[in-house]
Length: 78
Image (cartoon, rainbow, N blue to C red; front, side, top):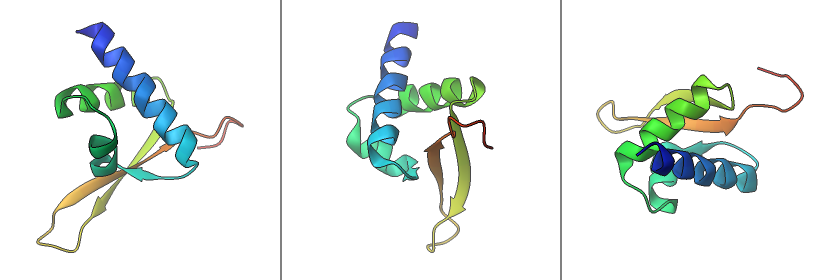
């Protein structure tokens, strides 16, 4: 399982690097062929290691939420 989470983390990293800007968690789920639970665990791993920044965003419908995810600046920002 750890290996699958690691591969999903790599896929997320590559997606964020190509986008060169924020990506919603919903878009990550659509773009990467992995179970949602693995993607959540992978994002947690990347966040704990300090590689990504996540910001909760509210969607206009009934308080639904999503997360905006970006790669942390390599220049030591944030």
